[in-house]
Picture 1 (cartoon, rainbow, N blue to C red):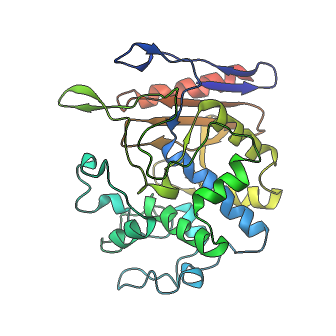
Picture 2 (cartoon, rainbow, N blue to C red; picture 1 turned 180 degrees about the vertical axis):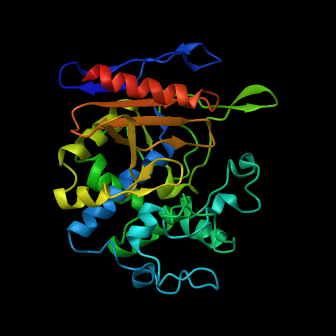
Length: 319
C-alpha cells in the first residue's frame, strides 16, 4: 500500500507475503501488474494529443483507421474516440469470445491489439446500460492503434515519453512479451482446484493499452497525484476526463476514470484493475488531489467490498 497526504507525506507499507514459497514479506515497493489502471495512463496520452491538436475526442475511428471497423454490427464511422475512452462505443470485449473461457490457455501467447480487435468484431453486441456504457477492453486496444497511427509510435513508447520519463517513474515499465516482473516482485496467485497457484509469469501483450503496464504503489500514486495537480493535462483536458456517465451499477465512469462517492459529499477518483496473473489494484485520489491511496494485491481471492471500505477509510483518515 502507498498513501500520500500533505501532512503525512508518502508512506509505503504492506500486509502479508509477497512470495508464498520463500516467505518474503510485503513492504510496499514491489512491482506488480496494474491491469486496467493502465487505461487512465493511456487516456492521459490521448488527451495530451487532443491538447496538441493532433486528434479530437469526437474524431471517428474511421478518420484515423479507415475501414478497420466496418461490419453489419459495428461501424467505425459512428464510433468516436470519446466513446472508446468512455466505454460507450458498443464494441464487445474480445475476452468474451470463444477460446477465452480458460485464460490459462493464453498464458504464454503473443497477441497484438489488432488481433484482439478482429476477435471482438466477430462477437455479438454486449448488453449496455441505458447510458450506453459497457466496459470493454477492446475499446482501449482500438485506442492503441489510433495512437500508433497518429504518432508513429506504439502506445508503450508514448507512455514512456509523455508520462514515465517526465515524472521520473523509475519502476514503471511496458513489458511487451516479457513474462517476468522486475524485482522485488509481488507474486500473483489465482485459485486452481481449491488451492492458490502461482501465476506471476504471464505474457500480457494481448492486454496492451487495456492493461499491460507494470508499476509499483509509489509510482502509481505519483502518476495520479501528478494527473490531478495539472502536471500532465491542461484544465480543459482534465475536465473532459472527468465528464462521467452512469455505468448501470450505481457508479459513474469518465474517460478512464471511476468516480466514487463513499459518503455524502466525499468524492474520490481512481481506476481498479484485475489481471489474469492474480494481480489486482485499487486506488483513489481525493477531489482536491491532496490525498491518494494505492493498493497492489497479489491474489484474486480477497473481499472486494471490505477492501474498498478500507481505501475510503484511509482517505478520510489522511484528510
